[in-house]
Image (tube, rainbow, N blue to C red):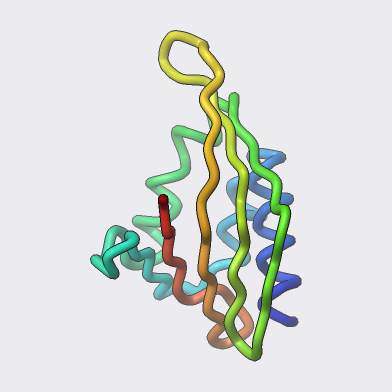
Length: 113
């Protein structure tokens, strides 16, 4: 499976708030980095834990306007929205870099403006 296919599959699961399908796209040793390359999450257990409450609560979504892939790397220009604590819709854009290993997404980096 290509990295672009996995990126699309995980986004679809994200938008459906399907935690199992979402996590199934990621490597057991997934590493999530912030914009500066600092590790934010390590391992699928921590990854699942980070998203569990969000998926249970709902009120979010994302689209991708551009996807560029090369070999085992993919970068998405993602446009997201969520309802904040007071129920007001917040929106933004972010670059998300994915790297493939062992047929799963192994590294994710969020590059914010």
